[in-house]
Length: 202
Image (cartoon, rainbow, N blue to C red):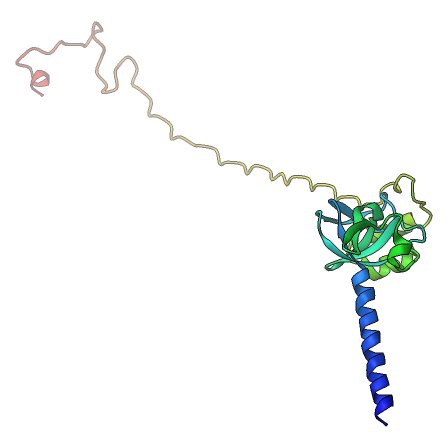
């Protein structure tokens, strides 16, 4: 009765070891700064930029192992496999050309379901229909990024009319006299005040 239990325990341990080995085999590092794309081609929209030495989990690669689907933190996308290295027998090895040796899974790319599962919050997700008939190696579809909103016209407020400045009219000057009503010098009626006159004493 103890043998079946022992056999089952060994089987569980072997399965766990196999899964751990497979998971480790799918861990890779970026050999240089790379762009993670929304599909297996440089023409697809940019998902995120990763610096050299970033750890990624390889979900799988195309059957020619040129592009691999990776997960880096919360982001998922495709990286050119020449920029991905895996440590094999203690030595870094490029995934490009060595995929079968590394026993990485082979997967396919279906734009609709892939974008639906990963990019619903991206600005270019709304232009998905422009990519349905697009083929790698071609120029990206025109206007696949959403058009920016035109700038709002400046608000021009009309100047408020200022009330006119009304100055009170000046009182009319008496004819032929100064401001105090005195006749100017040299005209009839003008008397130069003497030193003892009341005007000179004021």
